[in-house]
Length: 145
Image (cartoon, rainbow, N blue to C red; front, side, top):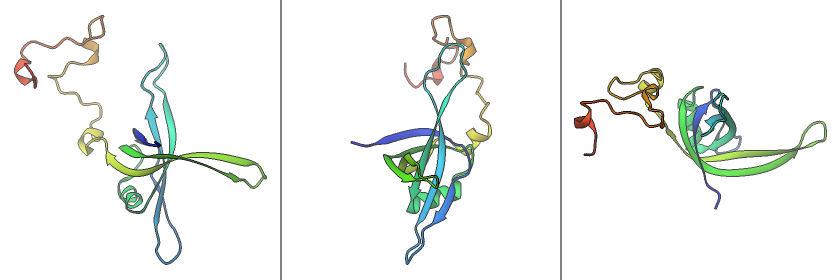
Protein backbone atom coordinates (compact mmCIF):
# COMPACT_ATOMS: atom_id res chain seq x y z
CA UNK A 1 0.00 0.00 0.00
CA UNK A 2 1.36 3.43 -0.95
CA UNK A 3 -0.50 6.13 1.02
CA UNK A 4 0.80 9.39 2.46
CA UNK A 5 -0.93 11.93 4.71
CA UNK A 6 0.97 15.14 5.49
CA UNK A 7 0.15 18.37 7.28
CA UNK A 8 2.29 21.42 6.72
CA UNK A 9 2.62 24.90 5.28
CA UNK A 10 3.37 25.86 1.71
CA UNK A 11 6.91 27.20 1.40
CA UNK A 12 5.86 29.38 -1.57
CA UNK A 13 2.80 29.92 -3.75
CA UNK A 14 1.83 26.81 -5.71
CA UNK A 15 3.27 26.87 -9.24
CA UNK A 16 0.52 26.13 -11.77
CA UNK A 17 0.95 25.09 -15.38
CA UNK A 18 -1.46 23.72 -17.93
CA UNK A 19 -0.68 20.77 -20.17
CA UNK A 20 -1.03 21.26 -23.90
CA UNK A 21 -3.32 19.32 -26.17
CA UNK A 22 -7.02 19.01 -26.77
CA UNK A 23 -7.86 18.97 -23.08
CA UNK A 24 -5.64 21.27 -21.03
CA UNK A 25 -5.03 19.74 -17.62
CA UNK A 26 -3.84 21.80 -14.63
CA UNK A 27 -0.62 20.69 -12.92
CA UNK A 28 0.36 22.23 -9.56
CA UNK A 29 3.82 21.89 -8.04
CA UNK A 30 4.56 23.00 -4.50
CA UNK A 31 6.70 22.25 -1.49
CA UNK A 32 5.23 21.52 1.92
CA UNK A 33 7.15 22.28 5.14
CA UNK A 34 6.22 19.52 7.59
CA UNK A 35 7.38 19.95 11.19
CA UNK A 36 9.12 16.99 12.72
CA UNK A 37 7.29 15.60 15.70
CA UNK A 38 10.27 15.35 18.02
CA UNK A 39 13.39 17.42 18.39
CA UNK A 40 16.63 16.90 20.20
CA UNK A 41 17.06 18.70 23.49
CA UNK A 42 18.30 22.23 22.88
CA UNK A 43 17.68 22.11 19.11
CA UNK A 44 15.23 24.30 17.27
CA UNK A 45 12.11 22.82 15.69
CA UNK A 46 13.07 21.23 12.37
CA UNK A 47 11.00 20.55 9.31
CA UNK A 48 11.15 18.38 6.23
CA UNK A 49 10.48 20.04 2.89
CA UNK A 50 8.47 17.67 0.73
CA UNK A 51 7.89 18.19 -2.99
CA UNK A 52 4.31 17.63 -4.10
CA UNK A 53 2.44 17.60 -7.41
CA UNK A 54 -1.33 17.72 -8.01
CA UNK A 55 -3.41 17.40 -11.18
CA UNK A 56 -6.83 18.45 -12.46
CA UNK A 57 -9.37 19.87 -10.01
CA UNK A 58 -6.96 19.47 -7.10
CA UNK A 59 -4.40 21.60 -8.96
CA UNK A 60 -7.07 24.21 -9.74
CA UNK A 61 -7.96 24.35 -6.03
CA UNK A 62 -4.30 25.00 -5.23
CA UNK A 63 -4.13 27.65 -7.95
CA UNK A 64 -6.90 29.50 -6.17
CA UNK A 65 -5.93 28.95 -2.52
CA UNK A 66 -2.31 27.71 -2.49
CA UNK A 67 -0.49 30.71 -1.02
CA UNK A 68 2.79 30.73 0.88
CA UNK A 69 2.28 29.95 4.56
CA UNK A 70 -1.17 28.37 4.17
CA UNK A 71 -1.51 25.19 6.22
CA UNK A 72 -2.90 22.17 4.37
CA UNK A 73 -3.48 18.48 4.92
CA UNK A 74 -2.61 16.54 1.78
CA UNK A 75 -3.32 12.92 1.01
CA UNK A 76 -1.71 11.00 -1.81
CA UNK A 77 1.03 8.58 -2.75
CA UNK A 78 4.80 8.65 -3.11
CA UNK A 79 6.14 8.44 -6.64
CA UNK A 80 9.79 8.10 -7.57
CA UNK A 81 11.35 8.83 -10.92
CA UNK A 82 14.54 9.79 -12.67
CA UNK A 83 15.82 11.84 -15.57
CA UNK A 84 19.14 12.78 -17.13
CA UNK A 85 20.09 16.43 -16.67
CA UNK A 86 21.93 18.65 -19.15
CA UNK A 87 25.31 17.55 -17.78
CA UNK A 88 24.43 13.92 -18.54
CA UNK A 89 24.01 12.95 -14.88
CA UNK A 90 21.09 10.82 -13.74
CA UNK A 91 18.89 12.65 -11.20
CA UNK A 92 16.46 10.76 -8.97
CA UNK A 93 13.23 12.38 -7.79
CA UNK A 94 10.68 11.68 -5.08
CA UNK A 95 7.32 13.48 -5.08
CA UNK A 96 4.01 13.11 -3.32
CA UNK A 97 1.25 12.87 -5.93
CA UNK A 98 -1.60 14.65 -4.17
CA UNK A 99 -5.04 13.12 -4.56
CA UNK A 100 -6.86 15.17 -1.93
CA UNK A 101 -6.11 18.47 -0.19
CA UNK A 102 -7.89 20.25 2.68
CA UNK A 103 -7.31 23.37 4.73
CA UNK A 104 -5.72 22.52 8.09
CA UNK A 105 -6.79 25.74 9.83
CA UNK A 106 -9.29 28.51 9.41
CA UNK A 107 -8.30 31.85 7.92
CA UNK A 108 -8.92 33.52 11.29
CA UNK A 109 -6.57 31.16 13.13
CA UNK A 110 -3.85 31.60 10.50
CA UNK A 111 -4.19 35.40 10.79
CA UNK A 112 -4.07 35.24 14.60
CA UNK A 113 -1.62 32.37 14.94
CA UNK A 114 -0.32 33.70 18.26
CA UNK A 115 -3.78 34.00 19.85
CA UNK A 116 -4.59 31.73 22.79
CA UNK A 117 -7.89 32.06 24.68
CA UNK A 118 -7.44 32.95 28.35
CA UNK A 119 -9.42 29.93 29.56
CA UNK A 120 -6.97 27.45 28.02
CA UNK A 121 -3.79 26.91 30.04
CA UNK A 122 -0.57 27.72 28.22
CA UNK A 123 2.37 25.31 28.08
CA UNK A 124 4.22 27.60 30.50
CA UNK A 125 1.70 26.51 33.15
CA UNK A 126 2.83 22.89 32.79
CA UNK A 127 3.85 21.08 35.93
CA UNK A 128 7.30 19.50 36.24
CA UNK A 129 5.87 16.15 35.15
CA UNK A 130 4.93 17.57 31.72
CA UNK A 131 1.18 17.82 32.34
CA UNK A 132 -0.67 21.13 32.38
CA UNK A 133 -2.71 22.14 35.41
CA UNK A 134 -6.37 22.84 34.68
CA UNK A 135 -7.40 26.13 36.26
CA UNK A 136 -10.23 26.18 38.82
CA UNK A 137 -13.71 27.01 37.52
CA UNK A 138 -13.24 25.48 34.08
CA UNK A 139 -15.10 22.24 34.89
CA UNK A 140 -18.35 23.39 33.24
CA UNK A 141 -16.51 24.08 29.99
CA UNK A 142 -14.97 20.57 29.67
CA UNK A 143 -16.74 18.19 27.27
CA UNK A 144 -16.51 15.34 29.79
CA UNK A 145 -17.11 14.89 33.54
